[in-house]
Image: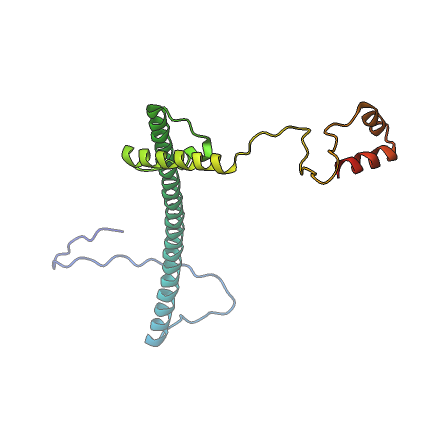
Length: 192
């Protein structure tokens, strides 16, 4: 822009007007004029479009941030779950080690199902549980153990008739191996 130079009267000279050539058209158009309502409507529409653009950009940014935070929260929850699982497994392993230590210290040998009954948080509780498990094992052995029996002894002694044979003779056994039906009938009659 040209500089204003002071005039003798102290007022600056106005800048020179620039002639802007208009496009050559066969019909000359009049300059467009706008009313205040038109200007207000144009400005309002432009502001509305700009506000929508900013709201969409802000909404997209917030939605992306929310997705990141949700993923972070899920990862934190999974990490908490993993820590709880591992700490539970660690506590369980420490208890089993304490039970094994107490069993060794006391010189007690228990089968695994009975040794698993020895639980507690301290040595006294574990010792009491071990004593209880040992007593339970002894009771179960006494109650459910069967004395050994002779393999060939009769299951039900027959007191009314002649004694049943306790063994199959070799000839009958050979006939049974060959699949002879009469040998099986004889064996069945003998076992009654």
